[in-house]
Image 1 (cartoon, one colour):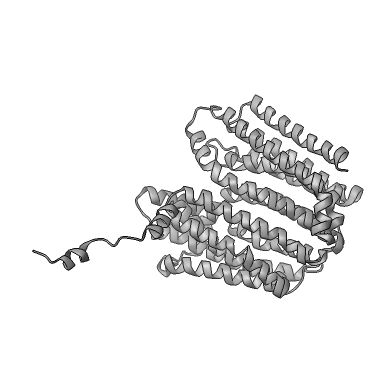
Image 2: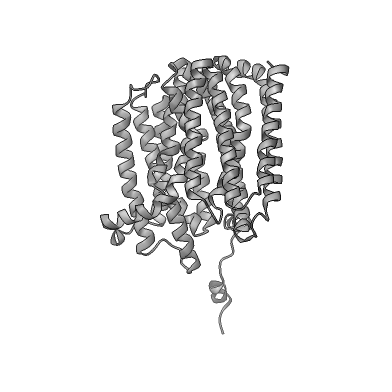
Amino acid sequence: MTSGSERQSTEPPVLPTAAGALSRFLESPRSYALVVPTVNACVAATGLFIPWFMEPVSFGQFILISTFVQYLWLLDLGTSQLITRTAARMKQAGMTRPAGVRIQGILWTRFYLAVVAISSALLLAYLFRNSFKVPLPMPATLLAIMAGGVLFILMGHLALYRGLSNYSQFTANNAIAQIGLTVPRVLGLFFGGLSGCFSVLILWFGGVAANMLRRDPLDIRYRPSFPRVGRTVVAAFPLFVSVSLWSFFMMANRWFVADLADPQTYGQFSFAAAVLGLYAGTFGTIAQAYYPKLSAEAYAAEPFALSPRVVRDALKLALVISVLSSIGVLTAKLIVPLVYGAYAAAVPALKIFLVAGIPMIMASWLMPIAMSARTRPSREIVVVYLLAIATLWAGTVIGFRVAELEGVGVGVIVASYVMLGGQSVLLRRSRVLSIRDSARLVLSVLLLSGSVTLLSVFVAP
């Protein structure tokens, strides 16, 4: 016979109601769909606050070198996607922690690639610091590269947790990392300038990365040989190409314009481009919560079975975006000079960029579906993306020479339609969209963006 205290000691501890509910929420797939878009909305909101206290030249430099933070991790050569795929297979085999030769080998490979990427970027940034009309400020650029390098390392463990369906770790660490881009980044920028901003991000991202490495460290026993590193990179590279080309398309004109415009003009461009980037990025985050289930259904469904649904959902989104863009073009001339007085000259370009947001966001909405389709036409993906990038470059150069920033905006619209049309073709080739639905989607978006353009020209010139 046991005593009451002994019986109590053998009973499992009961979590407090609030803590238990939070734990259950984070462990569910819907946690990411709710938490991360909310945090990204906060990132967008605080991002709109930044130009309020920065003059155009400094803001332009901030936007330019922030690309190192946002995109340096793409130099992992596809190992993030490879580790997610490998971890998913581990999950199916009943493994829930990053043990074993295969997964540790990829983590070590990412670490080596991070060292190479950071070192190369630091050297190139220093050598080409005065090669653009907008000079790269030192040491802020070097600090931005270091922040991007820490994020590079951090992304490996996030990819691992995503593949293992460890939603609590994936959502919590992803959200905490993104929070660094809200108030901490703004405070660093306000009190310490560009160098203060990126120093804060190094510390913030470093803390998140250190916590994940403490939980799931790299195991020296599984450090791969260089031939094995090479084999890992070769296996990951096909996954890298399409993702990197898409990301380059989204940010390339920052560098194209930096080689064309003087620092003051570039600051005005950066304001318009930043609004478009926040606009597109917010809806892109929503797409990350939308497409996994749809992609899984498309993978199992008969060819073209989901075509009406994909187009119906996309057109609903296009209508929402068109309404928001209409509000933007109607109010930009009033709000921007009132709130962002230093950027009043950016209003004409901003209105064009808001029109460009309609096809661009629609293309970003379709991109994950095309990338994850069962019959993904890899060569066609590369051709479409390279064509869109070439169109963006040509449109930016020609547009700037003809009409400066307004011309750049027109170039973005044309390139966005090339990308949207290309995504529709890819989805047709992947047997997701029918020819009729593809044409209906592109023509509907063209009609909506044309309507917003007419509104901008004749109602709010």
